[in-house]
Length: 117
Length: 114
Image (cartoon, rainbow over all chains, first blue to last red; front, side, top):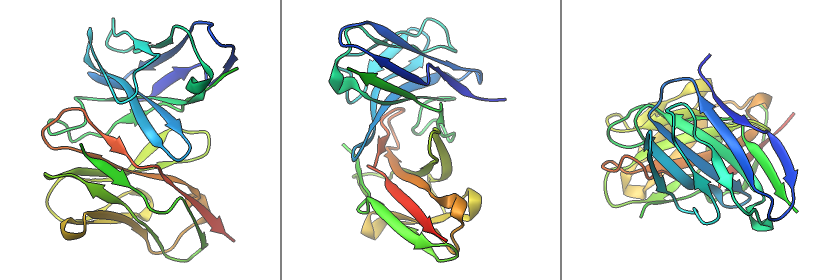
């Protein structure tokens, strides 16, 4: 089954304790991205990756890091989490980006709810 | 940069009634437009998309949307709502010549009354 898998689904942690949210897709997609969803703000992009070893900032990258060492995985790293990073996070993938060169939409994971105390 | 406005934060309709969710976009060129649905505790699922051609787009689950360039709108419609349609709906816009730059609206939460 084609899917985007995020782990963990839920996490409560404390300020300053490094954490990683994993994302894996089994569709051989080139493009992957991370979003955060906050009430009244919709989804805002954190980082995206066009392919292995190619990553770039989205709209709200501050406080986050990503890596793309393998095509299927795109972990989101919070080196020193703070309470303003409490949010619902989504990973997504698509074959080749979201613009002209792709008529395929993004596939989304089920989300990771992070609470930073 | 492009942007999306969904004017209605929350809409309540009765089961069997018709539905229209509003979406307005701001972008200078031809946009790519999407509607996604998010059920509680789940990720986003694509309902339909508009890239070019016929301005009335059919999607899954009986939804349709109409692209109106003169009004910068891409409203989502369904003639008869089912209780299972209760969810949050997101409109999104992406530009034609950039391989990554999708913007989402803030979402509209739909409640369906019995």
